[in-house]
Every structure is written in C-alpha cells, then in structure tokens.
Amino acid sequence: MVVSKIRKRIVEKLKNRYRLIIYNDTTFQSVWTMKLSRIKVFTVVSLASAGIIVLVIFLIAGTQLREYIPGYPNEEYRQMLIRNALLVDSLEQEIQSRDRFFMTINAIMRGEDPPDFSDSAETGEKAEVRNMPPLNQDSIFQDKILEERLSLSVQSSRSPSGSLSNLHFFIPIKGLITNKFNATKGHYGIDLVSQPNARISAVLGGTVLFAGWTLDTGYVIYLQHDNNLVSAYKHNAALLKKQGDRVNGGEAIAIIGNTGEMTTGPHLHFELWHEGKPVDPERYIVF
Image (cartoon, rainbow, N blue to C red; front, side, top):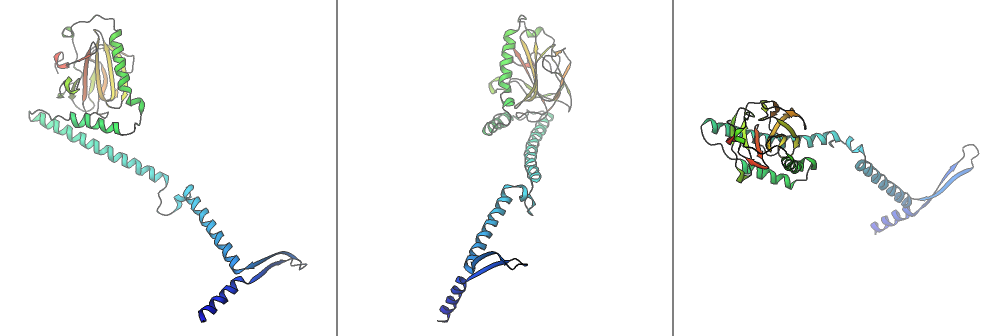
C-alpha cells in the first residue's frame, strides 16, 4: 500500500501543469507564456541531450577535432607509422640480400661454388610481387617495352652480321663471377661482384638504346653496337648516360649497385644479345 501511494504521488507530480510567464519589468505586461509539466520538461531535456551527443560524435568522427582527443594519433603520426612499417620491411629485405651476398663471397674465398639463390630471389620474389597490387604500372611493363625495342633495334640494324670472336671487347667491370650464364634457368647473362661504387664500362662503342628504371632490374642501360649486337647492364646504382648518347668502348656508363626486385646484393648483371638471341659473355670476354 505504501509503495503504491508513493508511485501515485510521483505520477501526479509529473502530470501537474505549470505556467512559465515572462513579464515586461516596466509595464508588467505578459510577453511570453508557456505551459509546462515535469514529464514534458524531462522529455525535451532527454531529446536535446541525445541530439547534442549525436552532434558531438559526428563532429569528432567526421572532422579533424578527433586529433585533439588524448591518445588518438594525428595524421602526421599515422603517416609516420606507415612510413616506419615500410622502412622495416625494406630493411628486412636488405638484410636478407646482405646475408646472401656474404654467403656468396665466403664460398668464393673458400674456393667453393657459390650458393644458387635464383629460385628464392627471382621466382619467389617475383611471384610475391605479382600477388600485390602494382604501385607503378609504367615500371612494371617497362621490361616488355624494352624487349620490343631490343627486337626492333636488331631487325633495323643495317650493319652486316659478323663473327663476335673478331671483336675486341672491353671488360665491363673487374670482379668475380658469382652466377654464370644459364639459358635453361632464364639467366641470360653473368653476375659480377666488384668494389662498392666501381664504374661500369661499355664493352664496345655504340649508342645508348635505353637508359632508365625497371621494377625487376632497377637502373639498367642497353647499348646498341654494330653486327646486330646489344649489351645490357643491370642493377646499377646510377646511370652516367642517357638514351641516344654515343659512347666509346671502355667509357664509363654506370655505377655498380643493388637496385630492382631481382637482386641478391650489390653486383652487375651483364648480358650480350646477338641477332636477338642471348649469348654467353664468357665465350668472348676474359673476366
């Protein structure tokens, strides 16, 4: 009984009507009036509070005001986190490349055959790149465009085809051969390891057919020579010539480096193409 009486009193108080009147202080004339009840005031205050909360949430979520919330990173910090994550990933790849490079050098110093990293370095990393969204489509298709240029250049050469054994080749760089020519495995040249920042020379006089960046082989330069001969120099740190330049045999054209996806350490990947077909450089050049 007592509980029911208390509830009844509360309901009656909520339903009681009140009048809010605003008077002119000078004339005592009624300016504005409104009828109120406790339940109506409670409802209006609740709806207004809910509207204010929704508005605040929208402002925080949809504007830059969220950056002023303690513990929420601003745009600069988020970009820094993304950049650091990319740097860590690049550092891991550089460490792997350095370890492979040291393993190769140690094997050569012991007089052993260097380990073959072609499966893990070329096919494995290349497959991983294919599964990722391309970041630069121009550099991805650069190799295909380069092959077309190479084929057209060989077909359009007017010099008569001669024997390569009669030509005097300059050594592109002084160093050790870590990976030999193997056309069956898709390795159409040789890999040479030399001193850091060593210069790379043109093996013959000719014209720069292409000089630029490709995704797989980094900074590359192709030279068109007489006798339908083309030489390729890949993974360079910097290029000293541009497309269309005329170079002499033994002239510096690039600096040895470690650029591109298909690399296991600082080295030069050197190729010779005769009449559109790859040939073993060791058959004509004494390294």
